[in-house]
Length: 361
Length: 253
Image (cartoon, rainbow over all chains, first blue to last red; front, top):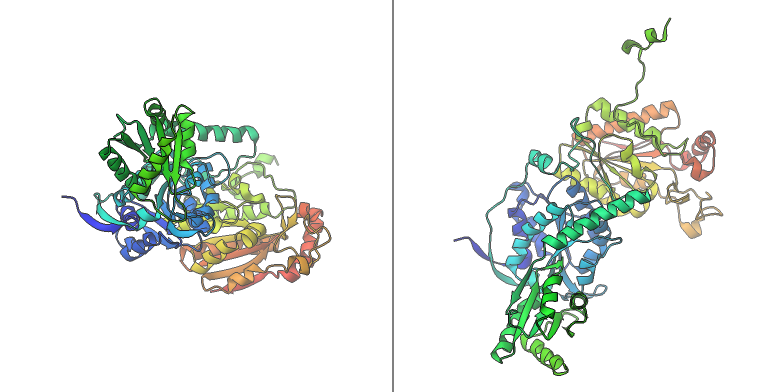
């Protein structure tokens, strides 16, 4: 039997980092994710795997340390919460522009501004639509359990390196803080310097006579060159959209109605679906696991089967816009959300759902 | 005597460093960047550390430093070079890592990054080009712009009431326990350039000895920004910049 340990989602991130061959973590304390760096510091991985852990002077610095580490072909990551991620958006744009892989974890709290330390999902737009300047995308994974937090670290790195692009784990205060049993996967060693040279020939490992210099930049002042650079990025994003969509559909096969929810809200809405089914309402649940790329095609399919789709979010309605784009007016799309860190119960969601289908023709 | 009889290895007194590429430099004639690039190239060459050196270029005129020095480079966001250098050095401790930054990049937008990298005593080299002006964006005021100095954003001269004082960031950084070598140099004469090169070499040697951060300010000219000829710019620098930014070692442990 694989080892299972009771731990917080945030702690799972730290243990996964050490065990999946992460080379460096650079972070800055912020609630509700400080356990990530605290766990790393108490585990002292520099004595075991050689992983570097450093508390930076700001989130701005953390993300730029990732730019440096990623340039060296290393598996580097940071974690933060909403206001800190806002500071990182400059760096994320540069990383995306320079096609550098890294992993960022956002344990989302309520905004805007300093907001609240309670959970929220108001950073959806920032995560999937950009956040920083320019036309770029990040692979966005939405964990719904402490186990997901653990597993998405390795998956995030894998996708980041596959596409040489930043990957983001978009979590929330509930998933970060709640304790669950987590299965620790087998240890993966860190890559040696020679493996890095071989697998990441683009890395700034020092110019040797057998190759040209490696330069990581997002700058191209010539318009033709810059359009070419942008087109390269865009064709990469089309590939990601074609290959990497992940979702979980629960009881959607016969569903008349579908709730779409991610992260902590998908856990709550699982119960809402059960309650509805007990009452004979054919309700299903779609949980996008990747928010970018978004399960657009699957939702298009649902739109020709179901009568109504409702997005449930801890926001004023952000993911619902992508659902509307997918549905394209074919069926009505509803929304239910709570703000300020208030988390609705399964019953509350069901009541809101019933209220909204009342008005359907 | 035929010219071929003269061009022989034993007669050679000078050769362009092989670290310098053949790419024509975009710097204005008279600008200090070209000279400083050459000095760094020569140090890397003479120490035989091309395969072990990673440069971090800034935002500003020297953003394109990677076009001129044939080593691996990372081009940082404005002011963030010391953060990139920190991670690079910590993840590859056997490498020589240096940042190359101007006064806007290092002493304005990147103040936090340089301060904390130096305070942590990162074993890196920082080359700081101080020409008291923003070159690339068209000659605006820098934190190091002198009182009374005219720039695009101080068209009537820098005034203390409006803009505060010229920032002597090098003296500030010398106060930090993490810096081992802090010096101010210039490259306006052959003698000065030779001294600057010695300082650069010492800084690179320090990082191998894990002594902490070595910081070299080069008081430089921006004759285009200053609207002076190259010769006049050098004279202006000696007369006006040196009294505020005196050359010499500030700290050497």
